[in-house]
Image 1 (tube, rainbow, N blue to C red):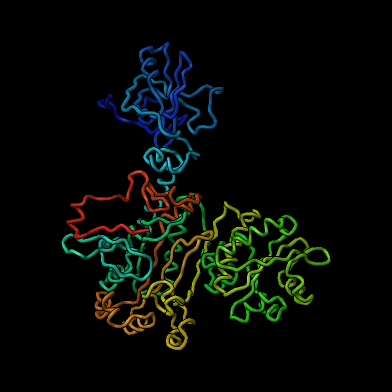
Image 2: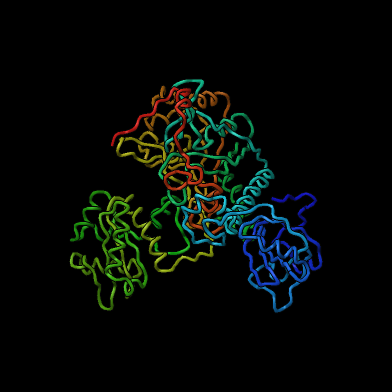
Length: 595
């Protein structure tokens, strides 16, 4: 292979324009395509900024032309030449550099390539497993390179913005102790302390609170977090947070500074001015209207409660659900009654059953009446009242779920998203951003028959609800807030408990004895004895933010070397077995589970 001695790159391929006509250039990159037209060879050269056409002419330099004959796709080249404007009839309007080309005067082949297992091209339709196995090739694709460059820009905006607002970037440990209460930890065995383990951080939560105790006032960090949980399309076992914490603040202070950050990101990466203040919904309003604490508000199809209308209905499914403390709620899919077949409605029933609903009742409004399997169980007055409440018109499809509230919300909330897609109601070119506030402080774990923290046990209750901690914990709201974009949680946080007595009460309410709390969080509780300021914070999911900015629905598209749904890396074959000697040094013996 040749080298680049005496060659120094002068320009990037995608940055040359007609204004550079006549400029002598040295370009370096990969061969996207080679076309042999006999006396002329055209090579499209690619780097991370784009592509440009290189011309080799046998009439002016036959030796160079012959050398170019040996060039193949994905060869690495260094080319010296002169930039020339193309003739008007030769302009390629499909290339940003289509007005110009480089007339080559020297060529060096820096690296040869075998035929790649898939074509390196924009929006490749090659099998994703194949692409991930050869991720280093997949990352040559222009769309993935744009994604990672945008990710870089978002990270830079974060550092610049928070620095300008008085935040100090501080790294926190990756090797810590396990404090189980949430997702599973990834554990790291200690060779020096046989039988003991570090845990990789699910978040820097405890350390950033300790930094507030230490007086740093405003902390931020772009940090890796790890959770050993089942994966979805928008989750990875290791993910990146833009993490921050602030002292001497309450909810409005945290919201204000972070609205500024999100506005700055959208302005500097997409050129979009987001209006502020962002919309807000309480948790209760989000659930009752949209069936979700991360609602997509780009379209309607809101939930409507009809429990009061059907509580004494002859339809036993409705009446029993309400008698057992649940509810009956419905969505009006406007005009869908005339376009959805019975088979399609049955498919919608399968959607809600996925979220534990027992079934889906339906009613199509027609001129002069309704068509529905449940119509015979409802009185004319009940049917009329339901239609009036939902502003029903001929052609509308009403969809009902009756069950416990959490099942009703979950199933109808997901059904709403399916309907939004099927009915073409979602404008993919808009960004709807909002805050969800006043989350419950606790949720009930029915299996263990105890209260658990909705977010984490350091979240502060709202001042006016503290009086209900002993008498009615389910009524207590938290000083917690999530920021939501187009139905995805971008980030979340809370004001923390800084009063030691209140923190102890919180631990007791979620079932920790004083001894257990000290065992798990003793270092934090000890620190709280020495003057703790009021503090709170928030963490953004960097991967998810970039995923939404790039309008992909696959988080792997914005991570350089991602894992698949089984938490495996197809390129390196991680995880893998290790040498017996390594296990022996760690005092570990593996046991294969029997089927």
